[in-house]
Amino acid sequence: MKSSKSGLELSSFCQWDGDTLVLNILGRPRANKTRIGKVIGKQLEIHVAENPVRGKATAHLVKFLAGEFEVAESSIVVVFGVYNVNKQVRITAPKRLPSAIEKQQGTVSRVQDQPKSLFNALPSQPPV
Image (cartoon, rainbow, N blue to C red; front, side, top):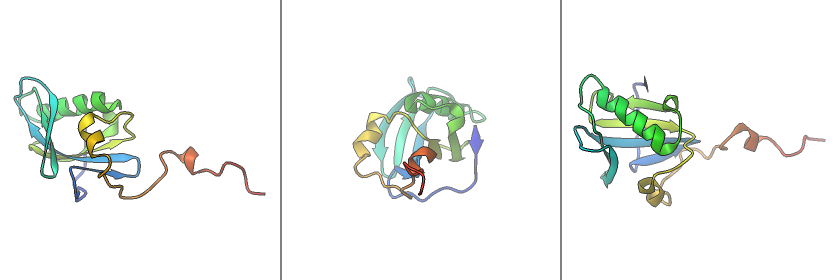
């Protein structure tokens, strides 16, 4: 589980930064089942079926998110909140978006309109 110090100020609970999805999360540990909840202000509530002891709930959350977004756990960086219910995570190149995020897709903003891959950025034919 990677972590960094500074976060991105979001106008919603999620925002695109190139091909990376940035999420503000309100973790709810000690839940009966790990699941995505509702949007509360500028955070997405996620219920986590793990106790908040020494980052175990956050590690469980990262594993859950990797499955939901169909990415490797190494593609998810906890920007802040490893030991707190208020978190920000960055998910690089998600292959799937859960329904809570798809519903917001029309209002999700992009920080930069970068190509999804290097191959999309290359010209189709070499210059003459």
